[in-house]
Image 1 (tube, rainbow, N blue to C red):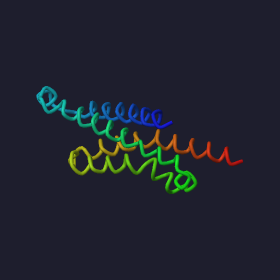
Image 2: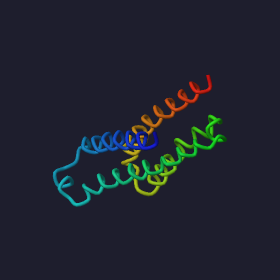
Image 3: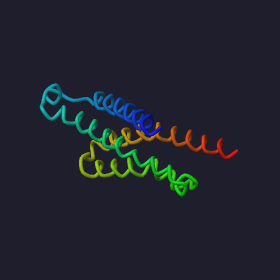
Length: 127
């Protein structure tokens, strides 16, 4: 489940973010500059780091985390959000903040789906 959650979130966020980056209207000189590709690399690196930080989902193997909804929620979302926040503070500037929010939101949607699926699976086991 961890790998599928990380992979789905990484693909979703990467595709949406890179498509968003392509829709930004730039002059031809800006598109041909060396700095244009840097935005793509930064988005891809941030998404990969966020996907790597989803390994905190393994904390749900512990009964204390698994049985507490708040701790389970933190194990799913805290790592990627902290990584995203660090990237948001250090890498993205004010004009790229909308791209940053799109990237985080598109990463969070598959993670929310897998979290709801996991909690539903746990409730099914308890019945």
